[in-house]
Image 1 (tube, rainbow, N blue to C red):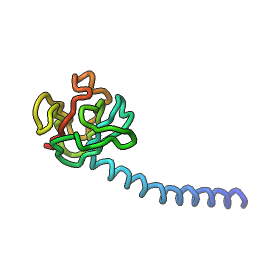
Image 2 (cartoon, rainbow, N blue to C red; image 1 turned 45 degrees about the vertical axis):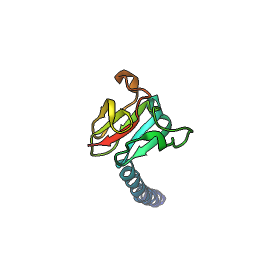
Image 3 (cartoon, rainbow, N blue to C red; image 1 turned 30 degrees about the vertical axis):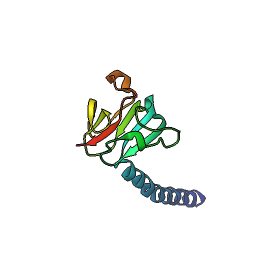
Image 4 (cartoon, rainbow, N blue to C red; image 1 turned 120 degrees about the vertical axis):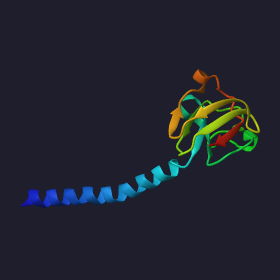
Length: 124
């Protein structure tokens, strides 16, 4: 009898925890799925800047969780959007560029010769 009672209570606790955990996880995934994010350091480290659309000049964007402007400071990215995104070396969408496919990530811009070069963001 005690075993059945403990088994029932344990199952109820697990179901209750799952019911509360699922909405939070779904909400986090929804928020993350809307951003193109550049990171200050390799492997998504340091500060970050989130974008939901075009930005012709990163000079007025500042790192979250760090100091300084995002301009010419990105070393990695995560594209959690349904859009391809192009980073340009010069403000106004000019100069050398880096192409990020939708729903992709790159932990090190050095292998693409684009480390610390991004100055504008263009959603396609």
